Length: 343
Image (cartoon, rainbow, N blue to C red; front, side):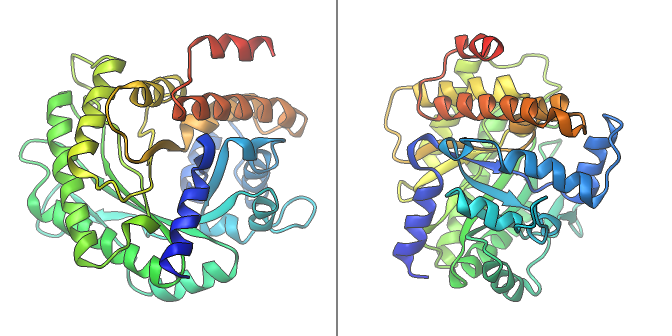
């Protein structure tokens, strides 16, 4: 795929207020979430759960891409249609998580590096033949006493860049996800400092690996105080700090930034995104969303593993995606939440 075609695909995923559904939890992670609601986790129940989202009527108005996991990309719907084709038929780009998870970083206690580069080229070819049009790789950075180290930041930045270069070589748009975790008691100022440092290292590495910035998407954390910090920043402070950090470290050639929710609940993730888009000043990239739990939690609670609850679960998902889309366009208002309850 040419650089132009990659750029076109990247832009299409986030066109007109659209975002990305991160439905790439591993079977182990999804099993934990289902078990919390006493729902038995099998390949069939996990398929039914995913299908509820993928077949929500009208959802392509707000969702331009869905990140799948290896199990899901091989599954078929209840009517026998491959799930990846189900998405494509609705004009939604199928994507695939390709990293093998974060592992302890040798020589740096408490830090992790994401693995999965070995054999990645062949896996990307196979996933593209199955219908994937983009991929995702997540790196995790912990803030702590003396952390992160330069070794950890640079190792993860290099892996992200190598992955992105391989994706583009095989015709897939890479979503580059360097996540500075909310874990800890750090202030929003410390979060801003570390997030800026990580983003700078990532784009330096992307440049060194000849990655086309126009043919990628960035999936960063918002700049937020640690979840154990005594003073939590206001929505407006988060928006201002986040946009300031992006302006300093993300080149304007990147077509879009799709934020991760990073443990925020659905309401806060929506409010923060809306506020970021309402802050004044230049925004050379689209600012959208690539949420997992923040898009799915309400629907999961309503569905509760029961087939008769699928329409209600889809209604909850549709509404949350509608709110997040409005936030991506800078049009979200809190009154939209009560409007959903009466719909």
